[in-house]
Length: 116
Image (tube, rainbow, N blue to C red; front, side, top):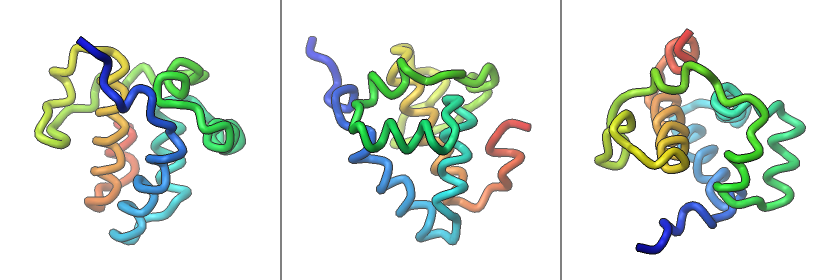
C-alpha cells in the first residue's frame, strides 16, 4: 500500500489554508501560529523557517522541537475521522493539527483549544 500523499505535501502549501480558514471566522494568523507552536514546539521564527524551506508534513513533524505531551487530549471528529482512533503516528499529528485549527475557526477559547 502506498503512503498517503499528504505526508509528502509541503507544509507551506497547506499553512495558508489553515490561516484562511481561521481568518474567515475572525481569528488571526498569530492564533494559528500559537496552536501550531503548542502542538509542535516551534516558535514563530522556527515555524517561518519550516515554511520558507517548504518541508513536507513528514519532515515538519519529525523536526518538531517539542511535541506537546497533552496532544493526546485532542479528541473529536475532523473530516469524518475520529482523531483519537487514528493509528498512524504521522497521520494522527496531522489530524490533531486539523482539529486544533477547526476549533480555532469555530470560535473556541484559546485556553480550551490548548487543553489548558
